[in-house]
Length: 204
Image (tube, rainbow, N blue to C red):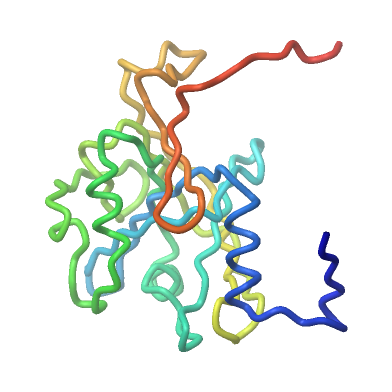
């Protein structure tokens, strides 16, 4: 059994990352498209992601600073053009999603790298992934930096202004998980499918 009081027994950022990512899981994946002021598109997956509010609808995801304490292109783009499209990572597109996790220069387009077609997203300028069954067009609500050290997070709160959803997975009330096939993130190179599920009735 191990107990750590971080002020007295500090763990390195790398060790804390492994502890957090290995125990707080599975995590949904936000596949986020952004665009710079000069029109350069960016696409990147983030597994520090969830719903923050329903009314108004707000999504939350947190890109980390890299090992040199530099922000991701996603954050740089949001500071220039405060819009994004959040797609749900799904099994059908997992190879393309993994491809877009590569570290590229800001001038390179991850859509092109992964062979993904762009499509217009209602209400915003940033394009969505044409093949993605679920996409949320968002405007930046707030951006909160947690520091300037390597692996410090930047919390992005993105308010949903438009939704694209494939009618084959949505009946107007429920999303068909078996058709959406969302995937979750574990640690390292590991992912998980949402196929082994069980239900428990909630108390009244």
